[in-house]
Figure 1 (cartoon, rainbow, N blue to C red):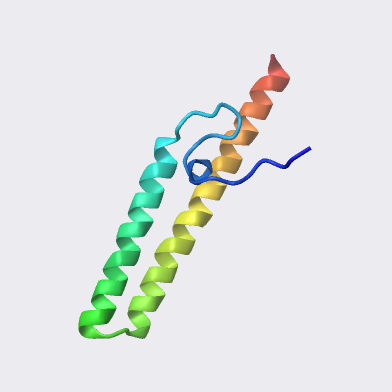
Figure 2 (figure 1 turned 90 degrees about the vertical axis):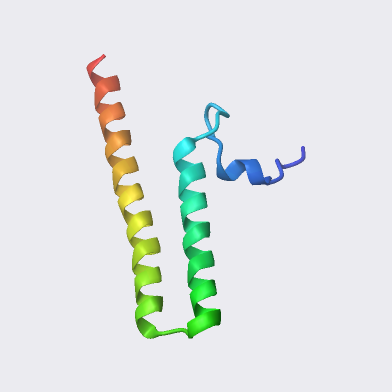
Length: 84
């Protein structure tokens, strides 16, 4: 039995339904734009520690907040299933 191979659509589709997730698409687009802006700024003005700090804080902060919100949503769904 062959194992399912990874593809790029796995980044933006829901694992259970197979439908596109707009939040994942916008998150990837935003992070790509931020990365491009940091690279552009670095090439034209130079890399500073504040730029690295800001970039890291934004990316890590976004991931942390999205994980907390996803966990809360899963908890709410789990509690609703118990009540039913």
